[in-house]
Length: 455
Image (cartoon, rainbow, N blue to C red; front, top):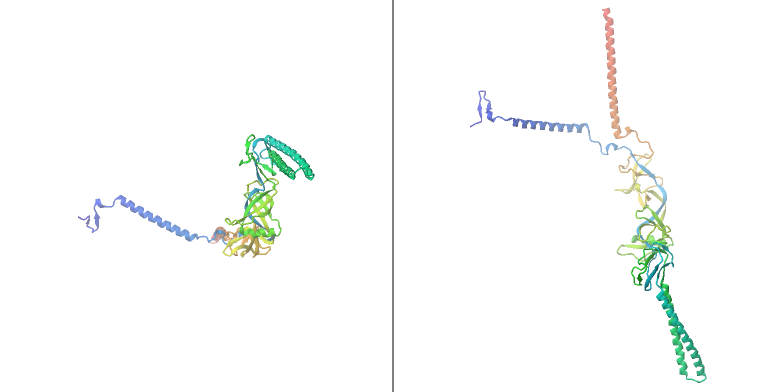
């Protein structure tokens, strides 16, 4: 069966149950509304693109003079300094140990005390060694008496042999006995000396001048020469040295002035390179290069009068090996690196900058020596180089900045101001013309009024 039928007018009609419902008409309405809004948005974007063109590259500062900081090329001396990390090393560190066995009877030092060479530190019980000394001395006295008696007998035997009263063998035997006793006396003397030394070892003294550390054994303990830690450690602090290493490429720079008899200054700074601790001198270098690291060792010595250097402390060393005289010097912030290599921005008389390639010399801190490319008195840019290019205009420190109308962005605002002023002028002109019109109308009215009576 068909869903339509012909009417008398010839137009097809739908049956009531097959006509579009309200939901279909709502969906079509939303579709048309969304399409219209999309077209409106596209038209708005096109309008904004045409009426507000994109700003040129560089923003509103493009083409405008840039404010910069400058510096003059000066002549000065530049030190050649080698930097290294070193360790504070005492010239003498001694572990004080007892050289005899015995009970530690007395400790005479205070931990951290400064002592001098020969100061009394501790004492081991001396009584056994005092008795051994007295025993050795007694043995020596006995043997000396026997030797004296043997010598007298030998003299008698010599005279009797001359008188042919005794056999010469008796004389020779007595002379041998004398020599034997002489040897025994020498042995006894050595025993006495050894006992004296042992007795002196009971009195322990400091072998160097320095500071004592923490005691390693307490009073009353039995000590022996084999104790690993000893009694105390004495460290020399004045003077003190710093051991540091340098790359092998710097060997010639260090040895050349040393062989010429020069004294190389060494400055010790803290780990942050912020505080100067001591100033000393290089004393010696190692006799070979460490092949595993490619470095060689050096030792610098410092007076350390204020004890600012502490043993095993890590410090930074600045070793002055040379000084370049009468160099052209610029701030390191002026040096730029790019396609031309190393260059600076040179400021011309007309406040324009130009790229000037330079050849660098030695640098130290914020000072850079220039070998070629600049002349004394040249003005170079040190700050504000981010947006500079060759031929750009700059504003020097203390110079009057240009008027707002001279800048590209300012010109735009200036035009707006002119347009606004023009609009005001037009409005004023309209107002004036309106007033003039009113005046002419009134004049016409007056003239017409004046002629009316004549009519």
